[in-house]
Amino acid sequence: MKKRLLALLLAGAMVFALAACGGDSGSGSGSGTAQTPAPATPAGGGEPAPETRTVKVGLICIGDENDQGYTYNFIRGRDAATEALEAKGIHVDWVTKYNIGEDSTCEDANIELAEEGCDLIINNSFGFEQFMLKVAPDYPEIEFISCTNQASWGDSLDNTHNAFANIYEGRYLAGVVAGMKLQQMITDGEITADQAVIGYVGAYSFAEVISGFTSYFLGARSVCPSVSMKVKFVGSWSDATEEANAAAALCDQGCVMISQHSDNTTPATTAQSKGAFHTGYNNDMTGVAPEASLIGTRIDWSVYFEYAIEAVANGQSFDQDWCHGMDQGAVVMTALNEAIAAPGTAEKLAEVEEQIRTGALQVFDTSTFTIGGQELTQAFALDTDGDFAPDSEEAVFDGAFHESYFQSAPYFALEIDGIEWLNAEF
Image (tube, rainbow, N blue to C red; front, top):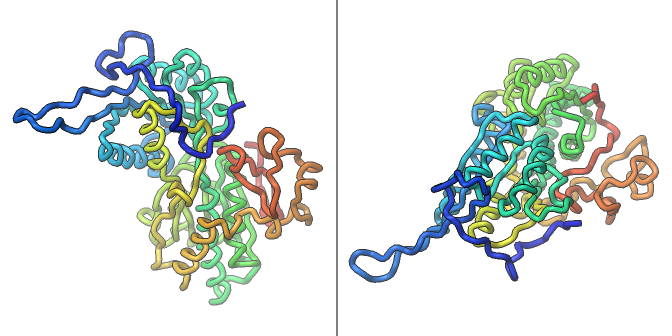
């Protein structure tokens, strides 16, 4: 089984047979490779111009940049990586497909991009992977990446990859910001301690979402001990109306802080309309909800895109399961809305971020939460829900649950005390 590599494999890398990319995509081979034109010699003699390499990259998106959330964040990463790679002499020829469904249209999109001569094809949604894996065996010289997924790195194919980031780190920090605001409201007499209730709009009851809202809750409780949380799932990654409805319902149930693992800005605007506060995901949402949105967190996909595309341009192999966080700048926070944040939030945020970056703070420290009144141990985990990590690895060790340690995709899927799931049919 293919294992997660810890560093770029430089030595002994196989160099792809170079072929023109994008000039003739009608051959049907689907095996386009990085194009390296011969260095140009200046008319007046002298040194040749720096070599420019071209890589053709396909990007398949579940939405488009107008969501101002999930897909917008990928497009931001695409553009930043393009600029960084140009500075290294690598030109990226992007072919981006928008609003592709998690269905056979995704399979078609992967085939179309392969036939157009892409060297690398990136799929940006969880539900895309099964369709990508149908196509990848037919194009062994093309690298296929499934973002936020888990099956590619453990299959029998050498040209499939998974990539994610430790977004739970950013969610913990957003929780700290939320908790400080709630504690301020308690201190100022605006709410009582038992009214410090967070409402969380979740897409699905998947480990990725559970891991995110649990880390958020733990961050909030680290500075506001009385906090509790209610979670409402909407059954979609991107349904602006249902996300707004869920946020409204949570506010009506007494939630004074809203957060989300969903793709749109409607939870933020709904929170503002209901007089609640908000922390966001994928984008800075203070622009649409300046009186409510405190901060957001996002994955900076440019870090991974630059890494993977540069490897392809250089004919090098790259990790089949990649995951980093604040240690490499792959997880970042949006600007703190200091106009409404609690006093001292910026200083606390910097302190906790440094602790996470250095490993001094473990987000899923098992001494900070319980499940049915019991502290999580590996023995308890095996007695309740079995192994969490792949390959029967023990995710609980050294006093913490080590999320995304054995594989990039999150596997924390426990219901901890203090969080109420209002529905779990999705």
